[in-house]
Amino acid sequence: MGRKIRYGLVVLLAAGLAAVFAGAERSEDSDFRLGRNMEILMNLFRDVNLFYVDSVSPDRLLEDAAAGMTGKLDPYTEYIPEEEMDDFEIMTTGKYGGIGSLIRKKGDWVVIAQPYKGFPADRAGLKIGDKIVEIEGQDARGFDPARVSALLKGDPGTTVRLKVERFATGKVEPVSIRRERIVISGVPYHGFVADSIGYIQHSDFTEDCSTDLRRALAELRSSGRLKGLILDLRGNGGGILQEAVKILSLFVPKGTEVVSMRGKFEQLDATFKTEGEPVDTELPIVVLTDRGSASAAEIVSGALQDLDRAVLLGQRTFGKGLVQSTRPLGYNSYLKVTTAKYYIPTGRCIQAIDYAHRNEDGSVGYVPDSLIREFRTRAGRKVYDGGGIMPDVRTEPRYVSRFAMILYGKGYIEDFVDGYVKRHPEPVDVERFALSDADYADFTEFMKDKDVEFRSESKLALAQLREKAKQERYLDRIGPQLDEIEKGLRDDKESNLKLYRKELSQIIEDEIILRSHYAQGVTRHKLLSDEEVKQAVELLGDTARYRDILSSQDTARK
Image 1 (tube, rainbow, N blue to C red):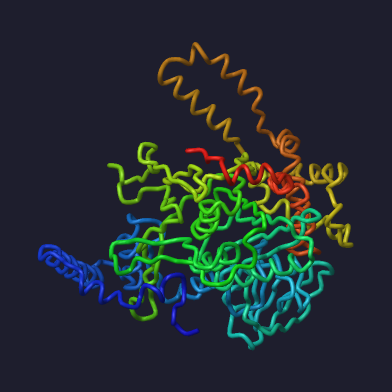
Image 2 (tube, rainbow, N blue to C red):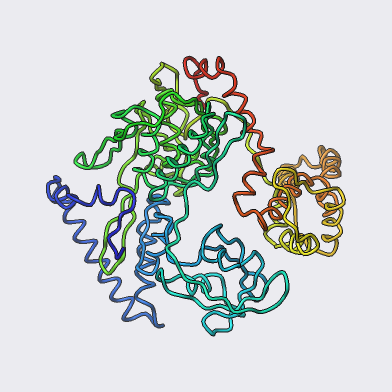
C-alpha cells in the first residue's frame, strides 16, 4: 500500500488542514515565539550532534526530542519513525504479509505459540511448541522473537524456508511456507450461547472489522432462530472511528447521528450519521463492557445506550474520548496527534483523564465529581459524562491473581501443558473438558521444585501499614492485631496453589484446548462458565426487565 496512510481519520483530516492553519488568526507574539523556538531547537540539535564528547545518533536525538515534545501532552500523541510504520499498519489495519502465527521465546529458541486457524503456518502443519531452529539457512539459536518475526514477515507470494524441531516427535524437519496477506479478523468468534441467543465477540476496530461483524450477524440470522444478541466488547481497545459508525449502522435507522468530533479548528469538526440501511433495528441487544473497552468500543456502546438501542452489562469503560489523526512529516515518518474529542448522541464526552490541566508535580487526574454533567438518552434516562460509559447493569470485575500471572509469565503453566499434551495427545472435548483432581495434583507436584517469588497485594499493604504505624508510634498499640492478620495471609507456594486452584485450573484448561482447537475453541470453552454471558442470556430472556431498563432506568453517576 506504499505510504498512503488510510488509518482512522487521516484521510478526513489531512485534506484542507493547511488551509485551516493559513486561515487561522494568529497573534504576532505567537508567530514570533513559534519561529524563535523552532530556530533554537534546530540549533540545539545541530550543536549536540557536532560537539557532544561522544558520538551520538541523529536518529536517536530526533526520537528523544520527539518523545520529550509529545510526552506531556497525552499517551496517544507520538512520533512514528519510518522503521515503525509497518507495526503501525498492522495495529491499525490488522493486515500484514507473513505466515499467520504467534511466536514466543523458550530458552535459547523461539517456538510457535499459536498458529492462526487456516493460515499458512497452520496449513504447513506447524503446531504449538514447534521450535524454529533455522530460518533461511541461519541458525536461529539465541534469536529474539522480534528478529524471528521480522524474518517470517515479507511480501505475500514469497516463500520462507525453515527448519523446525517438532514438539511431538523431537525430529528436525524442513518446512517451506508461502507468505500471504494475513488479515486478522475483528470478530474472532461468533455462535449461539443459548437456543435463541447469539453471541459475537468483537476484539478491535481494525480496517473492515464492520464487514466481519455484518457477516457474523448474517450467519446468526440465517439460522432463523435468533431472538437476542450479545455483543462482547470486553477488552476491545478501539481503533478506527469510521468502523464504529458502520457497526452502528447495522442496528439503528439510516441517517441517525451517532458521534461527532470537535477540536481546535471548527473547519475540522465533523458529525457522523449512519449511511447504510440497517440489518435489524428491533433485535434485543446486550453489550458487554469492562475497563478494557475503550475508544471506538465506547462509541459503539455509548451510542447504543444513548439511543436506548441496547442494554450495557459489565463494568464502566476506560474513558478515552480523544480522536487521533496521522500527519506526514517527510521521509516516511508520521505524527499521530490528538486533534479532537468525540461526543456521542446525548452530547456527552466520556474522556476520563484531564490531560489539559496537570497538577503541580506534572501528574494528571480524573475529571472531578463536581464537573460531571447529567445528560438524557432518547427515552429520557439519566446518563453522565466525565469518566467512561457506565453500564446499565453493573457486575463485579473479574481479577486474575498476581500469583497466577507470575506462574504464567515464568512459563510454568505452558511447561506443564507441554507434558500433559505429550501424555494425552488426543484432542479434548471443548464442551466437556475439565481438569480433574488428579490432573491438578500432578500440576501441584510439578510445581514443587519451581521458584516462585510472590508477595500478595494484601501482604504488601500490611507491610506498608506496619511501617506507617511505626513512624506514627502506633505500632505498640496495634502490633498484636497486625501479627494476627499476617498469620492469615499465607504467601507460601503450597497455600497459594490451593487458594487459586480455580483460576489456575481454568488457565491450564485453556492452554490444553488451544493445542487442538485453536483460539476459537478456547472462547467456546470459556463461554460455558462466563457469569456475565449467563446474566446477559437471562436478561434477554426477560423481555419485561429488558424493556424497563431501556425505558426508565437511569445509570449510576459513578
